[in-house]
Amino acid sequence: MIKFRYARFGVLVAALGLTAVGNMTPVSVFAQATETVKASIGALLHEASDLAKAKKFKDALAKLHDADNVAGKTAYESYVIESTRGSYAMAAGDKDTAVKAYEAVVSSGRLGGAQKLAMYEALGDTYYSMNNLPKASTWFNRYLSEGGEDPKIKQMMMQISFQNGDCAKVSKDLSANVKAQEKAGQTPAESDLDMLAICVKNDKSAYLLAIEKLTTYYPKKENWKNLMSLLPNKKGYSERLLLDSYRLKQEIGQLTTLDDYMEMSQLALQVGLPAEAQKIIDQGYKVGVFGVGPEAARHKRLKDLAAKNAAADLKALPQTEADANSAKEGTGLVNLGFAYITAGQYQKGIDLMQQGITKGDLNHPDDAKLHLGIGLIWAGKKADAVKLLRTVQGADGTADLARYWIIQANHPVGK
Image (cartoon, rainbow, N blue to C red; front, side, top):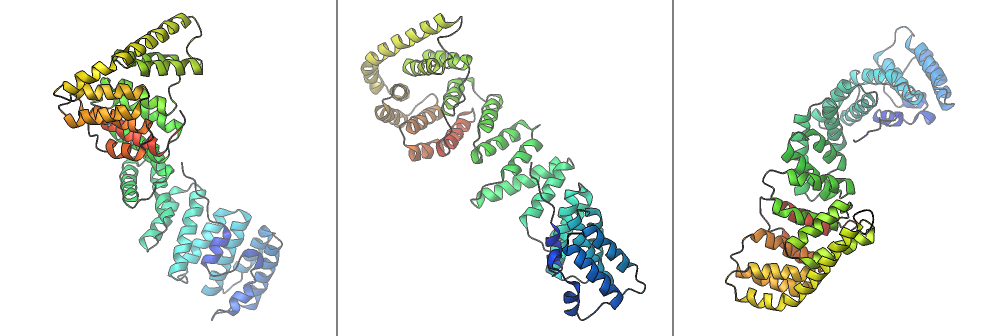
C-alpha cells in the first residue's frame, strides 16, 4: 500500500512566507509587515526564537504561551503567534498543537491563494499522519475544491477512501485513472493497481483484469504466479489450452514441480509433439525433479518413450509434409509446422504454419496464430510475434494467453 509522509514544519512555515525555524527572527518578519506587534509580545517572540535556534522547542512553545496570554492582542498579533507556534510545535513533534495553530492561521483570513493551498495540503498531510482520516479528507477536499492540482493529493484521497472501505468508489476512480494513464502512454502506479486488485477481488473478471494489469506493468514472479493460477478459472476457458498454459509457465520459470513436468510432457506426447516432450523431460532431469525417488524408473520409461517417438516422428515428417500440402485445408500444415518448431527447426516450421494459416479452413484458427506467435518468439522474432499475437481474439482463453505471451516478450523473466 502507498504511504505518505506528513508535511514537515519547514513546509508549513514556507506556506506563510516565513523562513525555517532555525533561522527565523520574528522581528525581521514583523518589520516587513504594515502591521506590527507590541513590545511585550515582540520580546517574548524573540526569546522563543532564541530557544528554537537552540532546538529547545518545548521551551519556545512555553514562551509563545506567555505571549498568547498578553492582554489586548490584535488579530495580527494572534496570527503571528499561531503561525510561529505551528512551526515550533511541528519541530517538537507535537502535531496536535501544530494543526490547531495552523487551522487558526487559515481562519485568520490573511493567507493568499497559493499560501492557502499549501496550508490545506500540509494540514491534510499532517492529519493523515495522525490517522485522523476525516480531518485529512476535509483539508484535502478543500485543497482540491479551491483549485489544487497536485496528483499526490488525489492519490491520498483514494487511499483514504480505501481505508474507509469504500471500494466501490476506489475501483471506479482507479479504473478511470488507469485507463487515462494508459491512453496518455503513462505507467500506472503499482500501488494503485494493488489497491484496485484488492477492491475488485470478489469480482472474478475484474480481479483477473487487475492482476493482468499488474503483471503487464510490474512482471514480478508473484504477479505471474497469481495470473496463471486465475486464468483456468475464467468463464469460457477451454481445457484444450492446458498444454499452452504449461508452455507459458515454462517460459516464465514457473514450471517447478514433478507433477508439472510429468503432466506437460505427457500432454505433449498425447498431441503428437514428442520432440517437445523430450525437451521437457530433459529439463526435468536437469533441475532434478526426474530421475530421483521411488518413481525414477517411471521417469526413465517416459524419457525413453519420448526419445523413441521423437526419432520416429522426425523420419515421418517428410511424408507428413507431402500429405499436408495436398490437403484442401491448412490444419495439417499448421500442426506440422508447429512440430518442426518444437523440434528446433524454427524457420521451416514458421513457413509451414504461415502456409497453413493462409490456406485456411482451420479447426481452431486462433490456436494456430497463438502457436505461430510462440514459434516466432522462440525464433527471436519478437516484433513479428507481438504483431501477430495482437490479432488473436478467441474468447476461450487463446486471446488471454496471446496477451500474456506479449507481456513476456516485452519483459522476459527467467526460464
